[in-house]
Amino acid sequence: MSGLGPLTARDLKKWYRNPVSLITGLIQPFFWLALFGYAFSKLGTIDPAAIDNAPSYITFLLGGVLTIIGLFTAMFSGVNIIFDRRLGPLSRFLMSPIHRSSIVFAKIISAMVRILVQVGIIILAALILPNGLIFAHGFTVEGALVIVTAVVLVAFIFSSMFSIIAVRITRPDTIFGILNLVNLPLLFTSYAMFPPALMAGWLSTIAQYNPVSWSAESIRTVIINGTTLTASQGGQVLTWLGGLALLAVAMLLIVYFVSEKEIRE
Amino acid sequence: MKAIETKDLTKIYSGHLKAVDALNIDVEEGEIYGLLGPNGAGKTTTIKMLTTSTPPTSGTAKVAGYDIIRESIKVRREIGVVPQDLTADEDLKGYENLMMVSQFYDIPTAKAKETIERLLGLVDLKEAADRYVRGYSGGMRKRLELIIGLVHDPKILFLDEPTLGLDVTTRSQMWDYVRQIQEKLNVTIILTSHYLEEVDALADRISIIDHGKVLVTGTSNELKAELKGDIIQMTFRTQGDEDIIKKYPNFIEIKDNGPNSVRMKVQNSDEELPDIIRYISENKLAVTKMTVQKPSLDEVFLEYTGKDIRVEESPGDFKKTMFNMRRVRK
Image 1 (cartoon, rainbow over the protein chains, first blue to last red):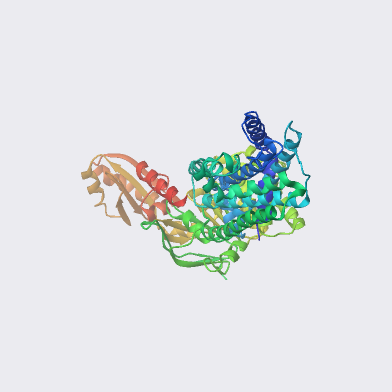
Image 2 (image 1 turned 90 degrees about the vertical axis):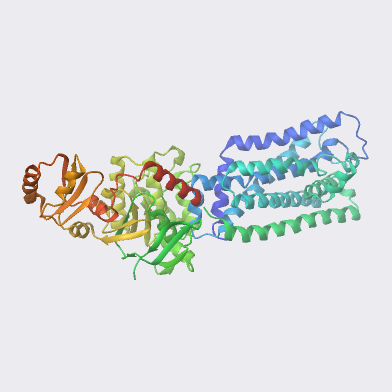
C-alpha cells in the first residue's frame, strides 16, 4: 500500500526522537505495576484462589497492565491525525498519490510498535521488582506468542477505533473528551485489575464481554500456568484470542473503507 | 495538449456559498499563468479542485490531460502543489520532509537524493536541510514548500499565494526562485495571488477573477492596452459639482467612484488635462483631489471588478467571508 512505509517511519522517528514521550510512556506502566501491585498485595485480603492461584499479585496483575498499556497508548494514536490536519501535513498527504487509508494505518502500526516496546520493558520491570512477576510453572514459547498476539490485537482494535473517529473530528478537545469518557469505564468493567471473585455479579457479567478482559485473561492464564497449562485452559485462551481477532478484522475493514472515502481536510 | 482546461467548473459550499461559478480557463504548456483576484474570489477553491483536494460541485476539468474526478490519482502524479498553508512537518528536518514526499511518489532513493540536492541548491536551502523545520524562518519555510512540490518532477506546478505573509525583500527573492524553476525545470506554473505586482512580474498570461468568475484574460500588456486611455480621478466638494463635470464634452467614459468622486477615462491625459482644468475653473467647481493614472494592472483590476484590489471589502464583510470559508474548509 503506497505511503504506508514513509508515513509509519515518520511517526516512529518523531516518537523515538522525543525523549519526554518515550520516558513518560515507560514510567506510567511502572506506576501501574508498583502502585496497584503493592497497594493490593499488602491488603492481605486476597485469597490466592481468587487470583487464580498466582504466586504474587503482580503476576496476576501483569496481564491487565499489559492490556491497559496497549489500550491507552492505542486510544491516543488517532489524536495525531487531528494535529496533522490542523498543522498542515495532512493536506500534503491528501494531495499525494498515496492510499488514503495508509494515513490511518500508519498511525495504527506505529502505535503497535510503540506498545510492543513498552510491553517488553514492563515484563522486564515486573521480573526485577521485588515480589514481582514469578513464573511458578515455567514459561513457554506458546505463552510468549499468546502475550504478543493479545497485545497486538488490543492495540490494533483500539487504535483503529480511535483513529477512525479522529478522521472525521477536527478539534482535539472533542477526541480527548471521548477518550476520557470511555477509558476508565472500559478498564473497570473488565478483569484487567480485579479477579471475577472480587467483582459485583452484574459487573462480572459485563466484564465477560469486554475485549479488555479477553486479552488480560489470556495473558494471565499463560503466565500463571506456564508449562502446566491444561487443554481446556488452552482452548479458553484460543477462544478469547479468536474473539479479539474477529474484532480486529472488523476494525481493519472499517478503517480501510471509511478512511479511503472519508478522510479529508 | 493544454496543461489545464476547465469546463464550467463550479464549487458551492454548504449549499449556498458559491465559491467558484462556472469557471472556464485554459492554461498552455510551459507558461506561467496568473489567477488574480481579491481575497474570497475563489482562487484557492479553484486550485483545490484542480489539484483534486476538493471535488467540484459541477463542471469538470482536465489537468495534464487527465480528468480531475475520474483520474485523480493520475492527476496527482503529474502535478506539484504549493498550497497557501504550510504542509511541512515541523518535527522533521527539511531533508526528511523532502525524502518522505519523494517516497509518496515511489521515487527510487538514489534518484530522490539527486533531485532533492538539486532542488535544495536551487532555492539556497542546502545548509538548512539538516535542521528541523520548526527552526526555519517564514521565508525558508516557503522555499521548502516550493521544492516539496517539485520532488517528483511534476509537469505542472500550482502556487497558491506563494508570497502571502512575506516581507517585500523576501517576496522578490521568491519571484526569482519561481522564475528560475520555470526556466530550469521547464514546468508549467499556475499561480494565484492578490498582489498585482506579483502576477505582473511573473505571469505570461493573467486571468482576473472575482466572485468565482473569470472577468478577463490576457497578457499584462494586452490587459493594459484594452483600457484604451488614461484615468483621471477627481473628488469634488459637492454632488452638484460632480454632476457638472459629467457634462464635460471630451472623454471616453465617466463613472461614479464613491461620494462626489468620478473616474474619467480620456484618450491622453497629458493633452486633456489643461482643458479639464480650464473647464473646472470656468464652472467654478471645487475640486478637493485630482489624480492621473496611466494604465497599470491596478487600473485593469479596478476596471473589471469595480473595486480597488488594495482596499478590502468593508472589514465586517471580509471577516465574515473568511470565517465562512475557514469553517467550510476545515
